[in-house]
Image (cartoon, rainbow, N blue to C red; front, side, top):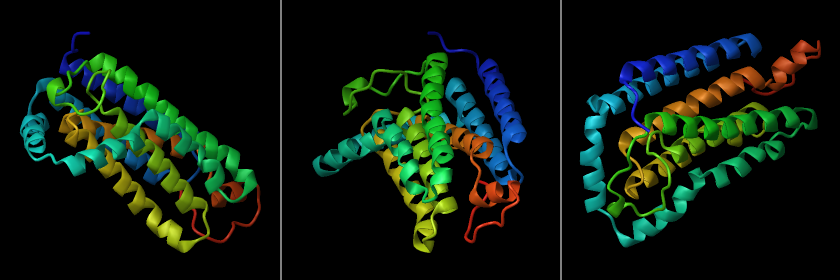
Length: 254
C-alpha cells in the first residue's frame, strides 16, 4: 500500500487524538486532568514521530546509524536473551497479562471493571497498531539482518505499543488498588523497565527502526491513558459516587 502524504496522516492522527480526548472527557470521573494530559502529550508525540517517519527527517535520521551500530555490536549471549525477552511484547503475552488485572485487584466488586479496562487497553492497541501499519506501510530494516520472524509493516512497533499498554494498565491497577506500599512504589518503575527492555530487543534484533519503537511507546501510552481515564473507576471515586466513605489508601485518577 502506498505511503500517504505526511499532512494527511498528521491530520488523521489529530482527529484520532481529539476524539480520544473527547471520549475520555465525557466518560471519565472527576480528577481526569492527569489522564487527559498524558493522552495529549503522548498523542502529540506520536503525531510528530509519524511526520518524521513519512518525511524521513529529524528523528528518522537516527534510524540507520543506530541500526548499523547495534548490528555491529551483537553477541551470541545477548542475542539469546533478547530473542526470549522480546516475546513479552507479543500479543500472545500482552493479552494474558491484561487478564492478570482480575487477580491484582483485591476487592471483588472492582475486579470486573479492572479486567475490562485492561483488556480494552491491550486489545484496542493491537487493533490500532495493525490499522496504522496498513496506512503507513513502512518497510522493515534489512531483512538479511533481522534475527526474529516478521510478517507486517514496520511502523509503529507492535511489541513496543503492546508492552506499553499492558504494563501501564497493570502498573496503574497495582498503584490504585493494592494496599501494599512496596508494590505501589515499585509498580511503575518495574513496568517502565519491562517496556524499555522489550523496545531495546526489537532494535537489537533488527526488527524495527528507532522511530518505530518510539512511535509504539507514544501510541500505546496515549491509548492506555485514554482507556483508563474513560473506563476505570478508582476505589475512592466509586465510593464517593455511591455516598460511601472513601477507603483508606492511595487511589489516583489515572
